[in-house]
Length: 101
Image (cartoon, rainbow, N blue to C red; front, top):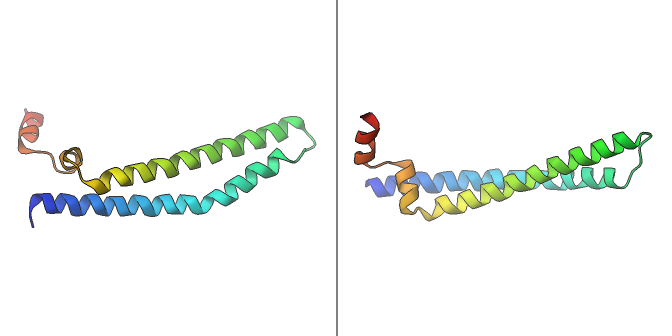
């Protein structure tokens, strides 16, 4: 197996793993949206508690969306197996020698 083939195989394997993680996060999206909408439409006994739960669910939902987008973009980048991905996964000998000095 050539070095380039090994890098392509590893890169695409990581890309598939990241897409699985992205799809797993997508499966949590309906519950997170439901929780946010629930506190957007309900008034608890304390207005501070209502605001707290609303903002906590908004932060959770936002980070969930960012993770989904990040996983998908990174998976796309790794699947294309460009020269920068090859350097990342299997650095050239000249960089390894420079790192040892």
